[in-house]
Image (cartoon, rainbow, N blue to C red; front, side, top):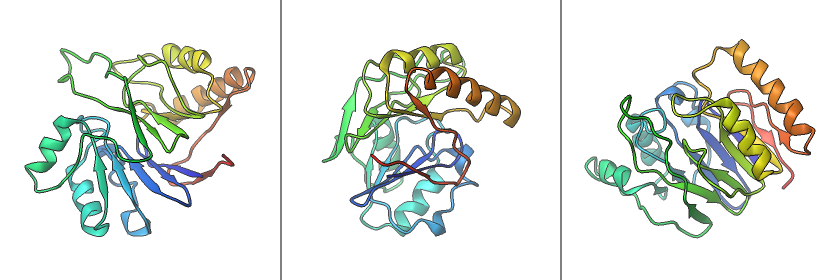
Length: 209
C-alpha cells in the first residue's frame, strides 16, 4: 500500500486492487497532480467544508476518471447533484462507515454532516473528529484545527493504538511548527509501538500491510 499526502487532509491511497482519494479540498488544489494520477476508483469526501471539498478538483477528477465512484454524506451528495455529478451516501464494497461526528465549529463555521470511513479494512479516515472509538491499522489523525486540540489527538492515538498514524489536518501550521510536533508525536507514539509517519507533500509512503 502507498499513501501520499497532498496537504491538509487529502490522501491518495493506492493498493493493487483499488485506489482512493480522500478529501481533496481547497488547500490541496495546487498540490494535487491530477494529470499524474493514473488510476482512481474511489473519491471519498467526509464533509462539505471547503478544506475537504473543492468542486473544481472534483470536476476535473470526474472528467478524467469516467468510472469514478464518489462516496460522501448526503449534504455533499446533494451539492454535487446540483452540479450534475453523481455521488452516493451509501458505502460500497470495501468501504465501511463508522460514527465520527465533526467536532463543534459553531459559531465560527456551519456544522456539517460527516462520515467516518474505514477503507479496505486497512485505513481509517475520521474527517474532523476526535469523537470516535475504533480504527483500522492505519489511522489518518487530524492533529490541529479550530475544532480540536493537539493533546486530544495524541491521547486518542494512544488510546486506540493503531499500527501507524498518518497526520492530517495540519495546514494551519508553518513548517517549523509542523515538523517539531511531528517529532514529538514520533517519540511518544513510538514508545508505545505505534509508527508515526512523517509525510511530505506528494511523496508516497510505502507500507507493507
